[in-house]
Length: 189
Image (cartoon, rainbow, N blue to C red; front, side):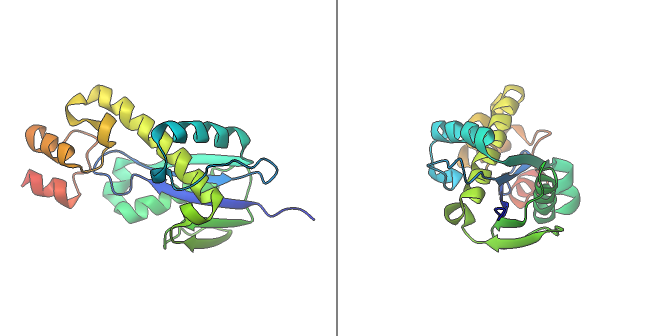
């Protein structure tokens, strides 16, 4: 009997004040288990890099998709996240039989979907998705730091830390800031 293809989906950057939302969909290969997969926030950046490479190499299929700043502004952050999740699942080279999504909300898909709160800790495919999405988004934020060094994107990755809010106060928002976000709107007066 053929094994069911289980897909895990997670997002990164939904709560940030800058940059795109990254979502990944991963179908792990049960014949090639990967140890150490968990919630990406619970492991070091170095370990995430190692695991991300292993996941991309050994998974049956994976896809990383984004929701742009314009998607976030036009749709709001929740709908933009759902769009990125849908893009990630639909971008897989293989159609999964079942998809598990981290959290309590899921996009409309033409396959069986189930949401799992704290899924990145419970379902390895969701943990794998969280890892490759985080590594991809973090790399992009480090790249954007080159263009906008005054904000410190290489450190906080666009999340609204004290350092980031101080930089926003001093320099105002740049082209990658989510100006529709309440804390940034408030700073703009």
